[in-house]
Length: 465
Image (tube, rainbow, N blue to C red; front, side):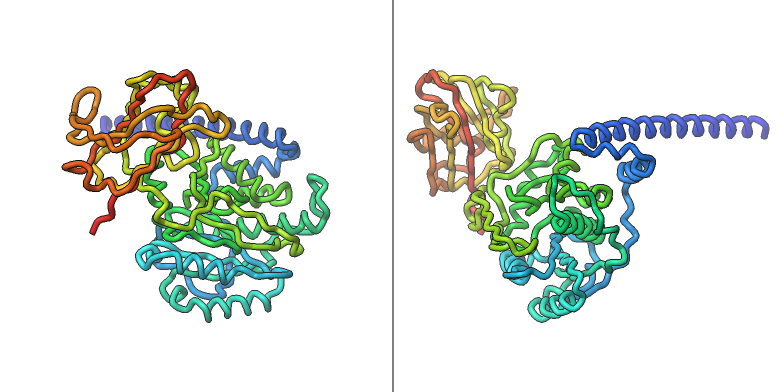
C-alpha cells in the first residue's frame, strides 16, 4: 500500500511539473506574440494599445477559440444541420442608388452545380439600421430563393443594434470625416458579427461583397487550388485583387479574426485590418491566384452612393480556361535566381520561375505523380518588366514510361512542337502518345545570353467520359 502511495505521489508530482512547464511555455509564447502585436501597433500609429484594457483584450485575441456571445435575428432560413465545405459570407445595407444583392445571390447559385451547392452555404447579414428595409429585403430573398432556403444553402440574419459598440464620437484617424469614420467602423463590426455567426458552419470561410458576379464552378476551382496548396501554411488566400472580395480563411481562424475586427473597429478600414491580421499570423506575403473568381459589378458605393466602377482585369468567367495542372515534380538544370523557384511557373498562385541564361541542352521537366490524359499545353515565357528574358528557341516533348531512378525521368519522348516568340500553345494532344504521358519536357535548343523567365505553365487533361 505504502509503495503504491509513493508511486501515486511521484506520478502526481511529475504531472504537476509537466503542466507547470507547459504553462510557462505558453505564457512565454503569449508574451512573444504580445510584443509582436505591440510593435505592429507602434508601426501603424496605434500606441495606445499598451493600456491595461487593450493588453487584456489582446490576450483574449491570442487565445480566441470561442465565438462572441451574440444573439441574432433569423430573417430567412436556418443554419445547415451538417457542416459544409465552404461558407460565403456577405453584408448588405440599403443603398442610395442601385442595389445588387439579389443579382449577387443569383450569380452564386446559377454558377454552381447541384453537387457544388451541397457543399456550401451563403450567409447574408442585413445590417441596415432601418429594420423595415431589412424585413422587406428578407421577404424578397425568400420569394426569389425558396429552394436554396429550404435546402440549407442560404441563411439571412440581422444583429440587433444593442450589441454594437459606440459609433459616435470615434477617433478620426487619417483625417477622415466623421460620417466616413462611422460608416467604416460599423462595417468592421458588421463583418465581425457575420464571421462570428459563420465560424462553425464549414471548413472554410470566403468573404465577398454584395455586388459581385461569379465564375462558373468557382467552388471547384477553389477546391482545386486548395489541393495545390496542400502541405503549405497559409492564413489568407485571395481569389480577387480588389479590396476584401474573395478572401478565403480557415474557419478555425474566424473567431480570432472577428475579435481582431472588434478590437480595432474604429482604427482603420476592414481591408487594411485584414492585411494586418494576415501579417500578425506570420503570413508575410500575399497569396493571390492568377485568375480571379469574382468580379465587382457595382457602379456606386454603399457609402453615400459615390461612383465606383472598379473592375478586376484578372477575372475569368469561363471555367474551361482554368487549367487542371495535375500534381507534378519539377526537375531542371537551369540555375535559379534568388527565390524564383521552378514550382512558381506551374503554380496557380501569381509568380514565375527565373533562371540564369540557359545553354543548348538545358531542360525544364514536369514529372506527374500519375500519368495524365493531356489534351492542351500552354506555356508563356518572359515578362513585361524583362521582355528579353523569354525562351528564344526551344521545343516541348511529351514523355511516357516513367523511370523510377534516383533522378526520375521518362524513357520515351515525342516532340509536339516548338516555341514561337517565347510562347507555346497546342491542343488536341490526347492521341499524341501511345499511353498517357508522365512527363512534359521543355528543351532549350539554342544558347542565349539573357536570363529565362517561365511565367506560366498551364495543362488541361481530358475529362472523364
